[in-house]
Image 1 (spheres, rainbow, N blue to C red):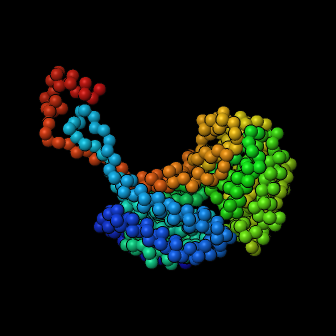
Image 2: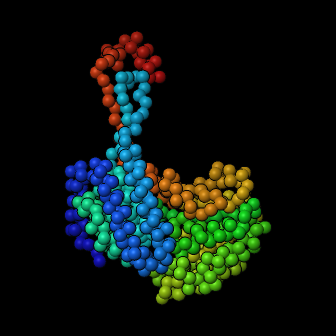
Image 3: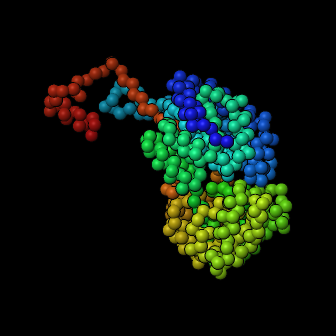
Length: 465
C-alpha cells in the first residue's frame, strides 16, 4: 500500500522541524532510541523471524544470526562507544596559530533517508538507521516492497518504540521511492543494485545531497593449490548458499587452479550434502528465492545453450514454492551470462585457471567487486592478493566473516559502491566532523597585519613555509 504524496511531504517537513528543534542532539536521547530498537527486536523476535521466513524462507537460526542478533550486537556496540565517538577530537595547532586550540566536533548531518534492501530486509533497513540515530540525525526509512512481510511488521512495530517526531518509516513501491528522492535530504543511504543506485545518485545530485551506495557486483573466490580443500569447500558453500545465495557479498564465482579443480568440485558437492541433505528442498536450513520472477531470472542463467561445455550439478527449481537448488556449474564459459551478470542466487560457476597469476589477472580485468576471497596457505600468494586486488573487502581463507567485526568498515569501491558504515565508520558517515578553532586574546602580534615590511615578510615565510 502506497502512502499519498502529500503525507510523504508532510512527514519530510516534520522531520526537518524536529531536527531544527535540537531534539536529537543529547546523547541521552540517542541512547534511548537505540535501546528502544533493541527492545523491539527482543520482544518481537518471533514476529520478525516469521516475516523473514515468509519473505525468504529463512530458518529461525539464520534469521537470528544474519538479522536480529546481528542488529542487537550492532546496537550494543554503538551504545557502548557512543560517548567516546561523540567527543571532540583534538588536533595539533601549528605555531603560526598560537595560542589556539583546534578540534574536530562530530555534528549530525540533519535528516537522513535510508532505503533498505529486500535480501536482508531487517538488517539492511535498521543497520544504517542505527548509525544515523547514534550520530544524532532524524531518519526517514523506506524498506523494500519486495519483502513485504518484513516491511509490514516493521511499519507496525517501529512507531510503538521510537520517537515518531524524529524517526519515521514509510511503505511503498518504486513510485514512493521516487517521491522521496525528489525531496531534499542531508544524506541518502541506499542498499541495492547498481541500476537503481545510478537513479538514486542522479536524484541526489539535484539537491547536492551526499550519498552512500552499498551495491554489489561479482565477488570472486580464488582457490590456490596450497589450501585445505575440505575446509575451503565448506566455507565457500556456507557463504554462497546462506540466504539461498541472495547476499551482496556472497561468493559469485570461483577461479580455481587447474590441478585442484576436480577435487574441489567433489568437496563442494559433499559439503552441500552435509549441510542440506540429499534433497535440499526438504531442508529446514535452506531458504527460498524472494519472488517468482527471480526464480525465472535464475533459471535463464543456466539454460544449456549459453553454457556450452559446462557441467551442471543441481539446477532444480520450483516456481510456485520459489525453491532453487544449490547449483554448481563446472567449466563455466567466461563469456556466459553467469560470468557477466551478478547472480544473486544459489548458482556457483567455476572457471578453471592455469595458475594463480592468471586468476589474479582475471579479477583485475573486471569491475572492482564488493568482496574478494582467497583460499591459500601460501604467504606470498596472500600478500599478492592484498597488493594487487582492488575490492571493497578482502577475506583470506573464509567467506563473509569480516561482517562480524564491528571494528571493520563495510563498503564498496568503484562500481560496487561508495561510502562505508558499521560501528564508528557508520557514526562518522552520518556526522560532519566540524573543525573548531578557538584562539586567545593574550597574544596578537602585528606581523600578519599590513603594512608589510621586509622583516614581516621574512618572518611570515619562516612561520608558514
